[in-house]
Length: 112
Length: 112
Image 1 (tube, each protein chain N blue to C red):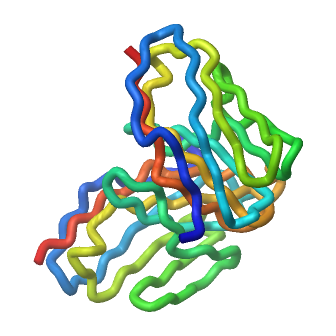
Image 2 (image 1 turned 30 degrees about the horizontal axis):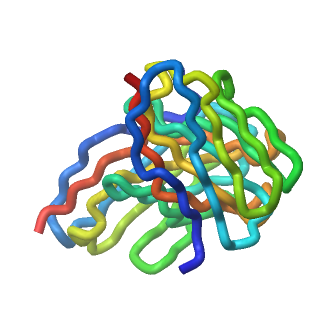
Image 3 (image 1 turned 120 degrees about the horizontal axis):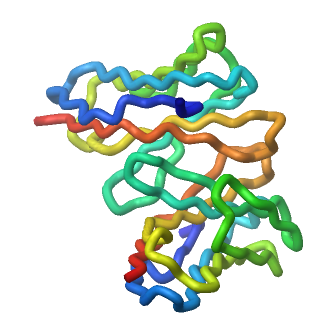
C-alpha cells in the first residue's frame, strides 16, 4: 500500500462547478501538507501549504486537513477551464527532513 | 524572471552513455532537489542538497550522482544510462529545508 493515495481520475466537471480533490495517507508523522497544480509538460506549481488541521483559504481554493482521519482535500470554487490540470498532493514528515511524499495526482478537466 | 532553469528540455540518449542534467536557480535558495516523475508512480526524490557543499540520498538514488559546488547549481549525472531511467526529471528548490519546494519545468529523457 502506498503511503499517500490519490484517485487518478480523470475528473470531468462543467465550468462553474465546485471541485473536490482528495488524498488519504497512512503515515501519522506527516505534519506538512501541500497541493501542487501541474499543467501538461510543465513543472508542479505550489498552490497551497498548510501544517495544521482545519481549513485554509486562498481565493477560489480551500485546503482542508483532517489529521485524525489522515485525509486532506482541496476544494476549487467556480471552476474555470484554466483549472484543467493534474493536481498533486504532497506531505512531509518532519522527522525525515525535507523529503516530500507525493500522491500520484488527479487529472481534472473543466469543460466550458 | 526569477525561478529554476533546467537544461536540456528533452534528450534522447543511447544506453550506456553518460549524461548530466543541469539545474540553476536564481532565488538564492539553500535547498535543492532532484525528482523523477513516472506514470503511476508519481514524483520520487532522487537526491537532495540542504546547502552548498552537502548532498543526501532520496528514495531512488541508485544510478545517479549529484554535486553542489555553489548555491545556484545542482547538476544530476547519470554515469551509464539504462532504459529504466527513461523519465521526466524535475529540479526543485526551497529557501530552507523546511520551506515549500518550487519546481522547474523538467527534462524529458528517453534512454534507448
